[in-house]
Structure formats: structure tokens, C-alpha cells
Image 1 (cartoon, rainbow, N blue to C red):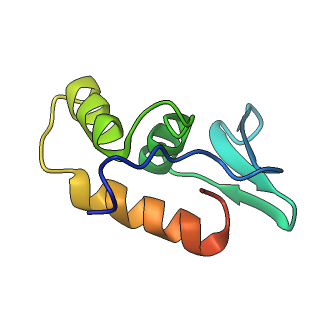
Image 2: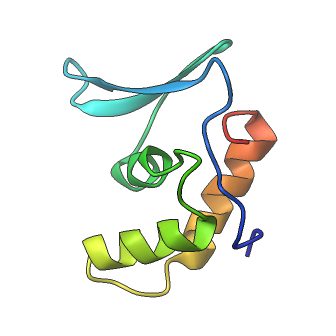
Image 3: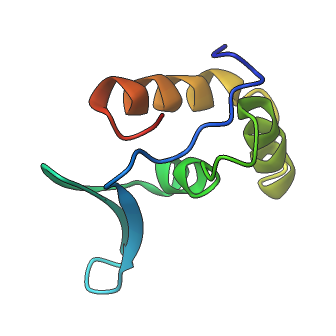
Length: 87
């Protein structure tokens, strides 16, 4: 997993916004916009710089009464870093 002590947050110039017309969350960034699925939006909403990566996993597992989601969270965070959405 990504460094469990990392405090991921959205990159400067990037923000989450709920779009009622699309009934979904979107991620707005300088080069465009991406419509997020419910899982991605739940993860990115917690990327506030206050929670560690492991705390995000724990919070999501508690919120959705599940376990073993660390690999999926890690994948999204890595992709977010690769695309410049998460730092």
C-alpha cells in the first residue's frame, strides 16, 4: 500500500463538486473534468490532508461495513497522483 502515514489531499486547482444534472460527483481540474463513480467520490472526498491513507481505508470500511478495500483505495490514490489530481 501507499505510505500509510501519507495525508493525501487534492492538488491545487482541483476540486470535487456534486453535479445535480448528472446526479454524481465530478472532479474538476485545470485540464477538464471527470465524472466519478460512487467509490471514487467516497475516497476523494476524504482526501482532505487531515486523514492518513490508512485512516481513509478504516473510515470507508466502517462507513460501508466492509473489509479488505485497501488495495482499491491504494489503486485510486496512485492513479490520482499519476494524473496530478492528488498530492
